[in-house]
Structure formats: C-alpha cells, structure tokens
Length: 91
Image 1: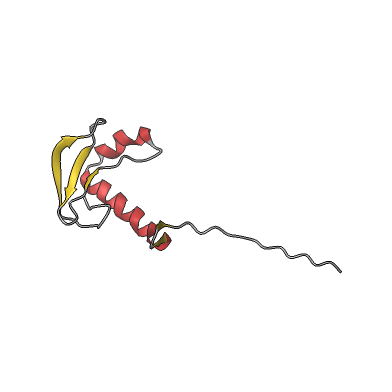
Image 2: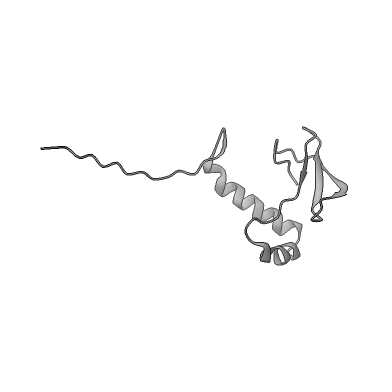
C-alpha cells in the first residue's frame, strides 16, 4: 500500500490495528504512520469490496487516482467550478 504523504511503495504493515480494526502501516521513506482508509460514504460497500481481494482494490485505487490526476495542484485536490459573469450597462 503506497504512502499517502510521499507515495513510496516501501511500506510496512504494523501489527497494531485501530479501534475500528483498520490495518496500520509505516512508510519506509518518510516514516509516517497511516491506516488503510475505508471507502468514504459507502459503508455498505465495505464487505463486497473487501471480498474482491487486494488486486481488485489496488486496481480501483489506481483508476480513481488516474482520474483525479487532472484535478491535482500543489495544495491537493482542486475542483474547477464553472462561473458565469453578467455585465449590465445603463443606457
């Protein structure tokens, strides 16, 4: 599992689990501790997704990361918002 801070793939799974039984990892490069995140907003999908296995989950994460790559800037995710400007002139 890649590190969410530096994207290093050299991570080590720790024996410690969170209070909600998530696995914890330590990055070999930046030494940051992190947990495997749940699918936000879709708690009913956790069972079916977990049953797919690590390879399928990794493919899903890679696909989402690729789709979000165009929305990344130096500060993280940036979602472009369309804006309309109306100009009125007094005649």
